[in-house]
Length: 495
Image (tube, rainbow, N blue to C red):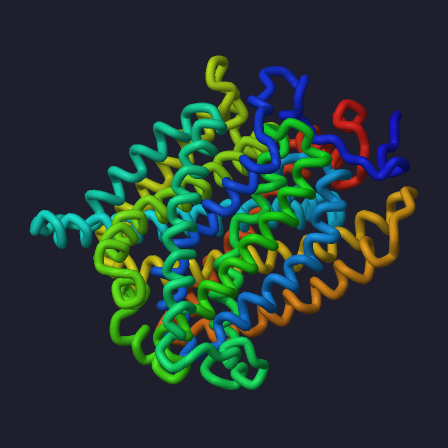
């Protein structure tokens, strides 16, 4: 029997190259970074999420929160990327939690991740529907329900998800370049005009932390980074995953952090430090578009409104791909139906898993429409808040898992990478979780609603733990196979 804990490497149960029906392995660092940045949806976040963050948090300090989040995530990435080279599984957070903390916490993390990213898929897709409806009403004077375009978006997502990942990467790359250029031109226009009352570093000053709700501000800042774990989720489709995943992770965090910190600072300066929260509350959907019109021109604002649709669509596509790969990885591990682990013979993509992810999103959207929820104030805000809480919890658990994993491995790594950095990251992420939970009623609007939504987040994690316990008693062979990841044994030896 081979004990892989002696080498510090854990092989994936299946799905890597050579494991029968391999996925297409053509993604390099640029393509994976595009996928991650598309999930961040620069234009969608700046035009949609940032004004909502100003309105809900009541704080003009969002640029500072983005900068602090960048530093925290770079520290987190030290252990995360080290695990990516040791746990060769595309499950990312769940696989690392399982490797470091055990099978029950691992499956708990898996169901929490699936729940969180599905919420994001549905919530952001609702924003696509609203943005499309608004554009059609403005330029064609035709009033159409938001949910019609949300379903159209899901149909296109289903088509792209059925095909190979490189097609999605190309679509996301084109959209990302266009929306980033639009925002940079607006930023430079604001800086060139000196903003509303002159250029100032006040939005980046620590003294601004006391203004408004720190917890909600930090939560929305972290929301801008959600999806960066896709660097590891796509490892089975990367050319050289042991090199590509770490490089793509650091590049993605740095690019997202620097770009958002600068752009959100420009928004605050463009509106005015003392005016930005009030303006966001008055017109969250039009805040950034009005800025573009004022500092660059009406044509630029029109183009921005059109690309806002494609930006959010690209975000939905990226989240769809993440959900699909999580399901695929869990199926290959034996904890989800085997059909979800089938690779399309021609497209070399997890097409069956993609179809299920699309169906779940479609049904969830139907339920939302039937309940007559507001697509932005309720659906987008609540779902993004709940998902952010879930993913920050996953990151905190991953930090603990890094410490646990390398305590058992004989491989010698630096104390900084295996103990200090993960411990610092865990403490920082635990603070973010506390601040988010404490301020959740402000986001939802009522304490009762916060308990309900937070309860669903907790329940999603409990489902995975219960599944692990059921597998241990009813399907011990499958449960033992999971030990290949959690203890470092070879999958073949574990069966």
